[in-house]
Every structure is written in structure tokens, then in C-alpha cells.
Image: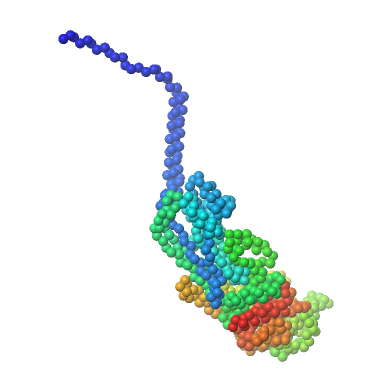
Length: 614
């Protein structure tokens, strides 16, 4: 066997020589790696630490979401069951800010804007309004009052519009419009500042809230209790499943003391005779129930419920005639001659006069100035009325007679009732204080006396002030509602009643849960006999005196009106009651730009309408 040849070593595989790596490139590479790692760590810190709570909320909310279900607002009826405030279907579009997909916000807003007919700026403004104020997963109403067709079109595209919800709620509707405006008030979306004040009471931004009238006073009764539902949604906020639900409890309904038919007739009569501010009301003299209450100028409460309600409210606030103000209870005026029945009752009670006490009206009285006897102050009567006893003086609304009753027949202002007693009796009849009516915005009024003048005007009380007060002039200021309550007290024998518009509250089954009754505020310190004398004199005023225009065929009316001429206030008043000898209702009419004769004519139409409804 031939010997094996020795193996030769194989040369190793060789590659081209590598160029040396520069230290600068190596340093740059390291910096890039470090920067990328730093960015990654920063992002992890941001996601897990800085925004961890947010994303945990998103993760939880994307699985389960709690939604508030607004309750149906209670309805409002008149005393005979006629609907005064109803709920109608109302389409809204809401956006859940937390469900808007990043990068598609503008697309979603643009589509909603186009289909709903709402400018994009309005939608974006509403979203910015709630930013930071409430949970981003609470729906924000961005479009209201949609036509049914627009709402259906949006619903068809809802699956392709993450965060968009189309809902059907209820819109408050007032069938009688401006006729009932100052009684019912209105509802409107809640504002951010109101939401802050109502924190913890279950309200959300743009929920409806009672803003005036009965809607405001009885908000807690009418609103009901909101319900909730727990739903499962996907990452885009789309509904997947209902997990649990608590049904809302509808608000209770309210029955008012108002007779809607009479209310319409009172408004018609008042409007036909009024050129500006005016008010009228009818009250049951035994129970304090208001059967009608009208203030002019008025407004349509339906216009304030609509989305443009804020602009309409702003326009009404700028109106110099103040249509939003209930002039019957929210503004004060000098009463003039309609104050004289109270003065007569007080003077009889104090023994200052008897029914047969006579004074002569030559058309004026002259009073020497307290600081200069050479200066004579003249207080005029509206006419030269001659010899007058009390019934005739009240029937003719003589200023001179009541100047003497208040301040005496001497130039020092003594011998009559005097300022202190005049003020005390006026306050006993409820003047100068709140009646407590269950409507907002009531004014107090003013019954002046020497102490008040010293404090308020830094001046002393003078004899001429007493004389003027006796005729219902001077500093005396009252609301028409206060005068109605005082007149009812004369009619019912001296009981001061709290006026009210709520009759009862009924639940959704129609069961009565609250019945409003008669509430007595006090008794006037006048004997029944003296009140009878005053009532008979007021009946004489309608039969043959200054209030003849208040007569109603087949109904005996008692009352008093202001008169035309010197010494009288520059607006028209009538107060009275009927039937004269068995009073059931009291009436007040006020015409700021009218006369007492015109006010009495309005009262006649009102009482005729009341009589027809009996």
C-alpha cells in the first residue's frame, strides 16, 4: 500500500479588508439609539403615569357606560282640567366628546352641521363650553329642534359617526301663549352658572329648568326624578347591550286655581282698553284663589323655550314696557282714590267720623306753609261736590272729604286720623308688605309715616303729607295685588287671605298628593258693622257714583274708581267685588295710561264674564 500523501493546509477564506469605523459615526449612532429609547420611555411614562387615569376611564367607559334618562315634566291644567302646559316631541343631536375618534373630529362635526342645518361654529362652541366642566363621556347637546326628517337622516348615518347621538326629548308647549305667560312662566336650558348653583341635584348642562312663574316656583314638583341605564358600548361609543336600567319617575302634574276661559276674557277686555302697562285679576274672597291674573304687555313663553330663546329674552329685557315683568305684583303705583275705603274704615273704627259726618267740598282746601304762614298750599278736589256725608263722599271719591278725615279740618293737620294711625291701618290691610303669593318677583311697596320720612328723606313730616296720604297720594305706593287682597278683606268681613294659584298636585296615576287650602294671614282691626258701612258706600259708588261704568246687568257690583281731575293720580284704577251684598269675588283693574272710568268699564266686562261662567 503506497504511503498517503501528507495533507496540505487549506488557506482560510478571506474577505476584502473593512474600512475603519470613525469615532464620530459611532458616537452619532449611539445618540440616535439613546434618543429613541428616551422617547419610548417618555411615552410609556405619559401613557401609564400622566394619562393613566384618562385611559383607564376610557377603557372602563368603552365597556360600560352610565346614561341619564330625563323624566317627563309634569303637566299644568286649569281648575277645570284644560291643559295649560304640555310636552311635545323634540329632536336633538348630541356629541360625546370622549368618543370622537382622533383625526375625525372635523369630519363628524361637518356632517352633523350639514344634516342638522346648524353652523359648525355653533357646534364647536357648545363643545368648548363644557370642556373641563363635565365628564367627557356625558353627551353634549349641539343641535335642537330638528325636523323629523333631519333627525332620521342623522340616525341612518349614526353608525358611521362615532360619538354622535340622536335623541327624542320633550319640548314644553303653552297652548294659550301670552295669555298665561305671567302665571306659567317658562322653561329654558340651564346655564353654566345655574348648573354650578344646582350642583349635586342631578342637573346637566342644557337640561330644561323652570325660569319664571309656576314653572320656577314648582320646579321640584314638575321635574320628576331622572332615571339611569347602564349600557355596553364598543370603542366608538356604539350601543352593544343594555346591562341595567332604572326608569325615570315623571314629574307630578299641577292643577291651578285659574279659570282659563275667564283668563282669556280678562286678557281680551284689558287689551282692548290698554295702551301700555296694565294689569287685572279676579280673586275668590273666601279662599284666596286667583281665578284670573293678567299683566300687559305680555310675551309668548313658547318663544323662550326654543333654541333662539336667549336672543328673544334679551330683546324682551330691552323693551321699555318690561313685558317680562308681572306688573300686577312686581311694580308699585300710587293708588289714589281706591285707597279711600280703607281710610273710611279706619276713621269709623277710631271714632273720627260717623256715617252722617258731613264736610263741604268747595273744590279745594288751603293750608298755610309750616315755615311761612304767608305762603298758602292748595290741595284740590276733582270737583265742587258740596255737602257730603260719608257714604256720599266715598261714592263720589271726594278728595276734600278725606283730606279732612285724615288731617282734620284745621290747618295744623290735627283732629283727623293722623299719619301714624293711617299707616297702621294701611299695613293692617296688607299694604306695604308681601302677600306671599306663590309666584316670583313680588314687590313690597311703601306705606309712609313720619319715621320713614325722617330716615329715608332726612325731612320732617308735614300736615300736607297727612292730607295727601288720606287721599291715596303722596309717598304711598302699592301693588295692584295688594289692593286686591285688601278689597277682598273688605268684602269678606275683614280676613286677610294669602292669594295663591296652586289648587292641587296630582301624581301620574291621577291621585291627589297635595291640596292647597285657604290660608289666613290676619284680621283687620275693623268691626263687621264698620266694614258693612264701607261696602254699602262702595255699592253706591257703582250705582250712582264715580264707578257707574262697572255696572253689570243682573249683578249688583260694589267698587270704587279713580277720577279725572285735579288731586288724582294720573292713571286709572278700579277695585270692587260682587255680588255687593253676598261677595264671592274681588276684582282689581289698573291702567297706567288710562282713566278710572276706563278701568271700571274693563271691570264690568270681567264681572260679566265671571257671572256667565257661574
